[in-house]
Image (cartoon, rainbow, N blue to C red; front, top):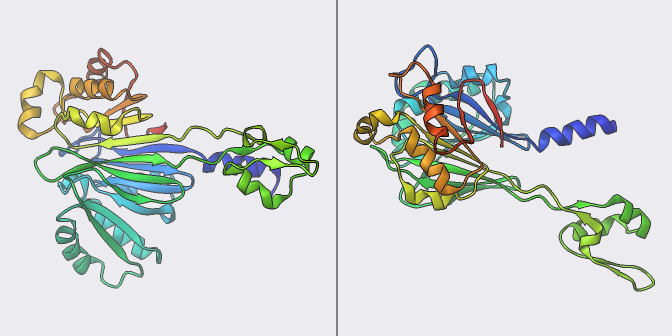
Length: 316
């Protein structure tokens, strides 16, 4: 592999992106599809919610199904999971063999298993279901790249959000120091992990002189659907990017309270309280024709706000 190709490969592996597949609410419109997003991190894909049309949107976004092994459902309302059985069926038609892990609130097994038994008998891979608590926050998945933590939400049915935290990379080795001190390759990993190096003549070089710091680990929180829960701000404090549902404008806050959703102003207040880097709005009610109304309302409180939209790719 040439140096250029290797460099491009490393850059691609280090990307932390959020792909918006759908950002509407329960009623699909000509403007928006039901809820679904995909996090792309170090070559792996993680889906949050799987509304109708999710697999077609994956195709349009050029996301490789083979890299998707984990799906996280916030709750079991149809606009967040009606696309799931179709996606599972498609994986079977593609002769997938790797396990597919699906996480969701209690009731996931009861809702999904009859569909699997009816539509997906004989698929060549396992669908592994993980029912998670919506009462407290806990780490439900972690590997060498990322950890995923649940965030309890308040909706009409059991519901939780998900916090994705990138695992901090080890520092980068300074090649000039390695060559100058003739440090053998077997010692490089221990130096990355914090060790120093002593030369043959007894001179000690501390770890800090042999490495350069890695980039700071990034984080993304997905909170949908939920009423305004200010105490959750501590659970997502300082994340780089926050998605907070904003189903209603402030003028319709009575509907938000009635349906256990949030207003745009509440989402912005929450982002400000949590001291996040950026706020992304979504889960728009079909009653509104102009999404810019959401943006204008939020920016009055939290200026660094963007609107989710189908096809949007956000760098975390």
